[in-house]
Length: 134
Image (cartoon, rainbow, N blue to C red):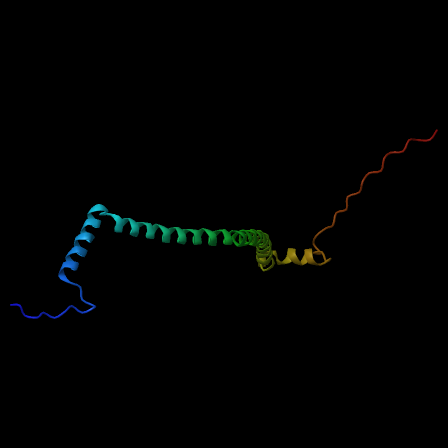
């Protein structure tokens, strides 16, 4: 019973030390039960603030680019509106030019020839009557 017990090595701690370490950890946890949760929440908030700051910074850098793109889009829409007017005019002319019922009228408009059966009327302006000389 009084046998020689092996001496503890440097890496091992005695059972008494383990118990006191556990008790002190339990005491700290009883004093501050939400300390771990508070640290975790603070870390999450810090990360979210950094991400939010990066997002806001990126948006602020994109604002001038977005404005120039809107101006270009406005110019393009104006050009499209002008072109649509021109295209509609050309379509109506195209359909009129290839209408078989209007061929004779178009030929008269595009040349100086007149249909021989058509009589040309020239309007003359009447001259002001002159007073008789006595």
